[in-house]
Length: 271
Ligand SMILES: [Zn+2]
Ligand SMILES: [Zn+2]
Image 1: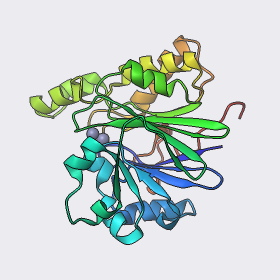
Image 2 (image 1 turned 90 degrees about the vertical axis):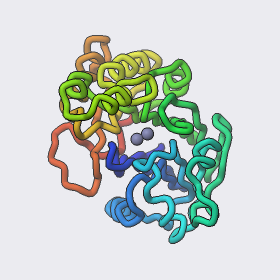
Image 3 (image 1 turned 180 degrees about the horizontal axis):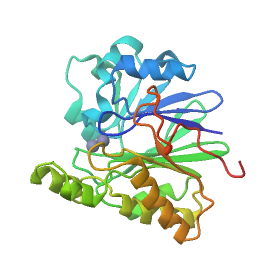
């Protein structure tokens, strides 16, 4: 069984902790080294036990902690080649730890197998990951400009997924952002809206996905209950009322009392 915890989720930082019996890794390190270490210690672990960090893309909300973590903990950091060349600076501590890799090439870390797949977004490159162990498969996809067959194919292989439900379109349109920023969010290389997420989730449930956590919610243009409500309603209408749905904490270390925010691990089939 793979346990997954969203330590941080959203525009203020993203970091997902993944573990099975013998291996612990992170997806992204978009908060400070200290904040990530604090969140891991709340779960009874530490950066010292993390075997590798897999980066989705080079935006700061996914990479902010990498330099200090590389300096203090010397953890291998796997990035796609375009993100590596865009982000890694010569002479940095990160340069010593960063490993540039090809998309869709599988990597084994302990007994976890990690494979990336491309996601359209306005970064040098963005990827999601499918993480497998002997008896479990888990997928993550955030910062999704628009749904693609490749995203759907990869996530449909997973039992459980973390998927972006970034914004409510009306909140973006009526909100305070300048027009260029609204256009960026709503563009084909921006972020995934709640309703597009709902459609993709229903498609994935039809393919066998049986646990969903919504993530990377915009603080300004979304609410956990809106994202949850739109996706839950659509899943129910499609006959998937039994599929567990959760919304990731923005920060696992803050005592969030919102009824729609849950920590991982997600439910397994039959639980
Ligand atoms: Zn991004
Ligand atoms: Zn992001």
